Each structure stands twice: as C-alpha cells, then as structure tokens.
Amino acid sequence: EIGMGLTGFGVFFLFFGMILFFDKALLAIGNVLFVAGLSFVIGLERTFRFFFQKHKMKATGFFLGGVLIVLIGWPLIGMILEIYGFFLLFR
Image (cartoon, rainbow, N blue to C red):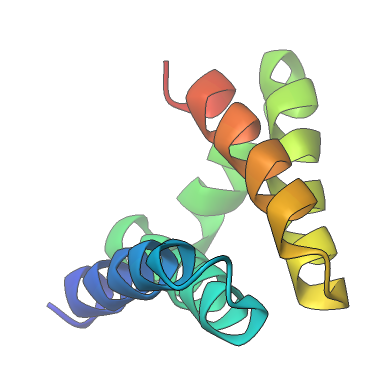
C-alpha cells in the first residue's frame, strides 16, 4: 500500500512538474518518489535485478541518467532521456 501511494505521488509530481513548464523541484520530487515507490512495491532486490539486467543496461543508463540530470538542474534534457529510458525498460 505504501509503495503504490509513493508511486502514485511520484507520477502525479512528474505530471504536475511537466504541466508547470518542467519545474525542476517537482520533477526531482517525482523521480525520487517514483523510484522509491517501485522499490517498495516489488522489493529492493527485485528492483535492483530489474534495472541491472545485462540486456537492459542501456535503458537503465538513460533512465537513471535522466533522473540525475533532472536532479542537477536541467529538467528538459533529463526528462527526454528519462522518457526514452522508460520506454526502453518497460516495452
């Protein structure tokens, strides 16, 4: 239940951050909540195994690199990388 709530709030903050012209604070909060919620839902070990499979390393690099770039302060570039990585991960 906590994981679903965190994931839901993460998606909400990401969506709201994009609506407000890529507000970097909301996007950073959304990224952190989304990844934390995913970890709570499926567990830390399974989350780690999911992201770091050999055939998903490129997608993980784009997704986590996008998160890092958003946290650094370049939200538009970070979200583009994140969305690309997200689609590669969950296709």
